[in-house]
Length: 497
Image (spheres, rainbow, N blue to C red):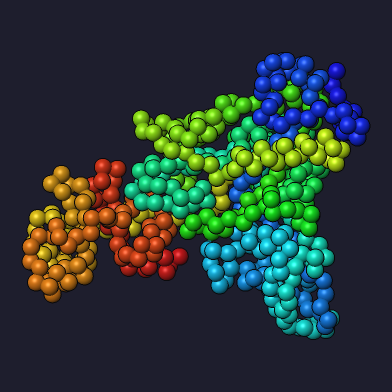
């Protein structure tokens, strides 16, 4: 017979509740079957601990004397949104410091507050009759705040795509550092411990579900932004009292050359109300599939390279087109298990009762891309024909081509017409000044930063800026030069947008 939530909560109160973690459930169901497992097990606890960029905190500072209506607020030089009321503000985890850049952000402010450290608050506003003050500064700790409520718009992704990189350059992304030529693959999520994968039909996870949030009791507010359950990418919006949280389960992070994020620990108890729920909580890492995407290609056209299981990913190595590629997780399985175990212990001690949702989350929603009034130009639409040369020609010959054709860059190609280097007008001038008249072989740059014809010009512009160069040879899939795009051309085009 199905169990009710009140029966389970009564067992929690009298100490007879039977709780297991989600990674234990496959073996239990395998041994007993789902029907008997549903009779035996009352609660299955889940856990996840990973970088959840869509996180932040609402704060109320209280009124100063004389009072101020804050229009801008900074905490340790990280701006918080202050467009509500007078002394409320929201600080997001990925907002960067105005003085420390990528090395410190909103996530660090949140961790500092949870660690009971003081942060420097600075605010400005416009004067009114009831709010005459224009600026205020003060050291603030979490005990000085009237309220500090974590409200995270998108957490606990059901699963993540795997990221890898086919290009010949390193990519710095929200999925970590991706090495060139499929040098590694990164993934996230806790697999068999994943909260949503243990309740994929949202029978027990919904509006009002009580959860473990960074060491405190929290709640599911609703579905998260970018909620896409139709494709197994469900997300949750969650909230909780920051003052009750612990840095054991909340940590700021720096993603190298990308920005900041907040590692958030979430555990959700799944009450085993019937056989169907018992069967769903028996999901294993081998059952959970995800897709490997090439992050070297623009977002909308990223090719799906392969489908793999979390069991394969957790092994540390996957096979990709005959190549062994190392895998690494952006999440911590150790912390996810610790969270599931801690939540189980609290339930068994009677310190954490369960709550069913007051409303179910949507199960068929999908996501669509941003509506754009105009298409972003592609490199192929703005590139120019490129004059190429062989590495055997002399510096003097190259100089004559640059002067005669009024160009500043000469891609160097091999006998088979493949790109092998590039020389610039500066390289030629320097060689002439030093009386180096031999071939281009000794002066050309061999590690050439390139573009592909089907990528947006915004990516090409970013690459020019990042590498501090002035041109990108455009190559096809065979490494043959088909054009060139320069910083001057891009500057003219972007200035018109």
